[in-house]
Length: 278
Image 1 (cartoon, rainbow, N blue to C red):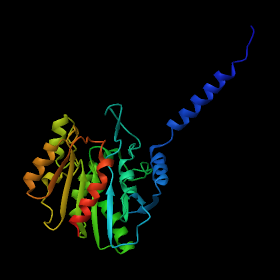
Image 2: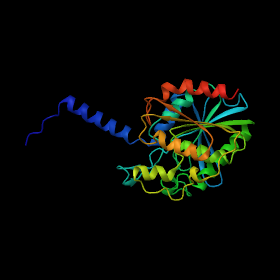
Image 3: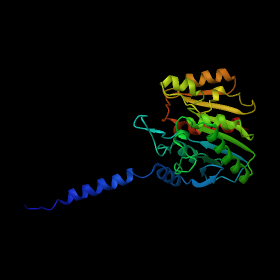
Image 4: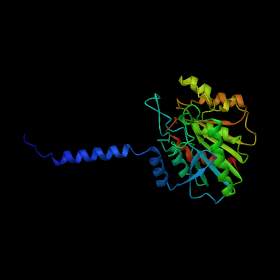
């Protein structure tokens, strides 16, 4: 049998396929870190009683007494259309990193327990990024990390900025952080029961539901932004939540959905916050 040499273009194609496969196998948390680095955000790690928490800071941290605290969405708890639990829940989208990179105020993004490369830590369990993603254990770990940041930087006032599930955590954290001055949420989920029923999801058993908690103190400014085209967290969910709580305001942004349109509207959102806190 005669063996012929493969054309060079075929060999080159095989090498390209192998290279692409290697890129696709890069862990999500490493990709997240690279995006943060490209946006000139530095990463540190805070170790709480049970968890390691990744923290990303902009270059203005330490220059003022007011601090913006960013809380990212739920990331990727599930794969295969919700049939399988993801081993690494770190977000595959980088919207919150991009928003923080545009913030001229001192700002910090606090990750969640078991995210950002720590999913194999001894106290981690898939429940902490699936059904119990807003559990007391998760909220307390983020609160502990935040308290460390406040102490190290001598911060006197914080604004919690949460996207999607990060908005849920902002509502839950505000009750623990006495220095909370304001909450800004983007597509925040505040009624876990109503949200699960809307999408016919299984209940988030083990999670704390903001809709079932006491109202936050009246001195905390609350501005909740939702997209008019958001079919994940439709405006009606936020409107119903706020009508029950009797505080906070809603801003419906025309043409914005759950993922798209936020970057374009971010300058006006930041300007509005600045004016309201004067």
